[in-house]
Length: 337
Image (tube, rainbow, N blue to C red):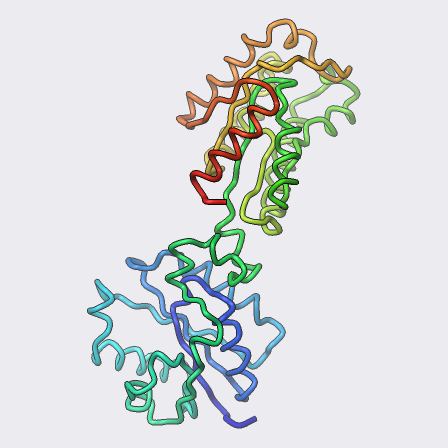
C-alpha cells in the first residue's frame, strides 16, 4: 500500500459509477480509506440513509473502507462553500478518524484550488472527472438518460411503478406481461389465484387467505423492483384485494380490510391505470359468475375504493391494442422512454 490512511468525500447524491471507480482506486492505495458522506437534510435530493446503504453494501467486500457521516447544516450551497464550513468539516473528520490523514482523493474539478492541500496538509490525488463522463446533477435531471451510469444497487430508487387494476377479465395480467416484455423489465403477477387454488375454490376462502395474499404481494413487490429496468408493472393491488375480501367474506374479513388499508397507505405508484370492462369476458372456470353477470356494477365498486382512498387513476377502455398503445404513449410522454 502506498498510504496508511486516506480520505475520499462527497455527497453521492446519487452514487454513480464514477464514484464507484474512484473509491475502488482510492481504497486500493490505502491501508484504510475513509469515505466521507456529506449530507444536508435541507438541500439533498436523496435522503442520507439511502446513500449510506448504497455505499456500505457496494463495498462490503473491501474491509479497509469505512464511512463517516458528515452533516452539512448550511442553508445554501454557497453558504457551505466557505473556508469556515470546510474547516469545521475537516476538524470533524479528524475527530472521527483519530489520526492524521496521509492522502486525500478528489475529482480533478478541484485541481489548482489547493483547497485540500491547505486544509489537510497532505498528499492530494486527483481523479480525472472526464474519464467517466457523468455527474450526480445530470442523473438528478434525467436518471433514465444516464441509466447505464447508475449502479444496480441504486436503480430501484428511480424505477417507476405502474399499476393495473379493474374488475375480473379486463386484461390486467395480459397488459402487464406484454408491457414488461416490451420494456425489458419485470411485472408482478397477482398472487390471489395461487392462494385461491390452495383453498379449493374462492367460495371456500377464509380471512387468513386474504392476509396471505396481501403480505405475499407486497413482499414480492419489494424484491422484484430491485431487479427492474426503469419501469415495474404491477397486476392488482391491496384495494382490489379488499374488494374481494368484502365480496367473498360477507363482512367477516374486517382484519383483512384493515390490512389492505394499511398496505395502501405505504404503497406509492407513479401511474395507476383502471381497465374498464370493455373487452369480452373470458370465463376460464376460475372467475366469478356473479361478477361476470354484473361487470359494470362491480367495476364501479372497485373504482369507488380508489376514489375513497384519494388515488388518481387513468381509465383505459377500447380493445387490447388501444390500451397497450395508450399506456406506451403516456409512458413516453411522462418519462421519455
